[in-house]
Amino acid sequence: FFSTKTTMFLALISTPYILIGAAASAVTLTYFSWCKGIHNLRLKLSAQETDNRREDNEDNITAGDLRRRIKQLPDVVQKYIKAVSHDVEKLADEEIVPFARSLRMEQEGELLLNGQFIDFAATEEFRTRYKHAGFVWDAVTKTQCIPNLVAMPIHVCVAYVNGAGMAKAQLPMGIPVMVAQSNTPMLNQSELMRWAAEATLFPLALMPPNINIENTDHNMSAEETALKWLPSEEGDGNSAILELKHHTTTARLFFHFNSDTNLVTSIHGTRPKLIGGKYVMTNWGCFLSDNNPKHPRDADHEHVE
Image 1: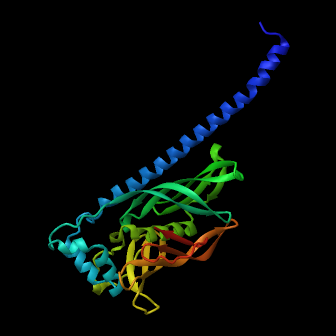
Image 2 (image 1 turned 90 degrees about the vertical axis):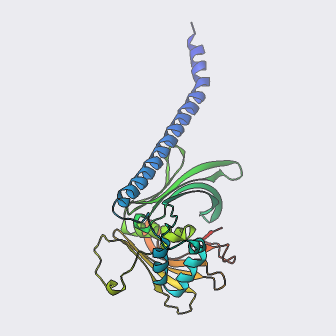
């Protein structure tokens, strides 16, 4: 049996290992808790679409119906939709247009954090119907705790599910870096604007329903979802306004198009931004670099390659 001194010595040398083991266990449990939360958000996103699909027939859009819808759009948007859906022109009027209900994207890029751009990797679940607008963006990035020596991962989640926005980021062991109060009007608007901008990855998501021209001025209920394109106030022929209402949130975005390719080059709007714990309306833009190689690189602009 051990003497008192031996016991104290064993306890002393084993303490660091116990602490390291406890910390590792806490990090592991926190990570699994994070993954479970992301999984539950994705389940809600899928359930939202499944429930709403029972109420409409958007899975069965014919080529003829799509062509009629296109004719009701502003000229510059007509050119855009035709440019990105040229395969539809080959279909007979009665043929069904292939229309994905969802996308799963693996992403790599850079985030601006404390004045520096840092690498991130993310997975995003994205719903392609504006009536079922929603996404879950799960990312991991690293911040330098000790410059050039120790980097610590940061888990980031931004989502828009069932009309509610959310945004949070945390370090290992669940230490919060940023948490925005979920389902507030400002955050909901911010994330709906993000959905509309990212919908350019699947442009048919931005097609409005068949419009009865004689009834375009009907009064919408507070819960009605609607998407419409309007001629640009700039009057240059290369831009248009997208208005999207989803649940009780409205997003308004200005789309600019390349006059040669008819593709979207940039998207602008006034978007809520969390600054010092309060939301401030700021100018915001998204640049699609394949269509517009000259784009700014700052805090209020995003670009997609």
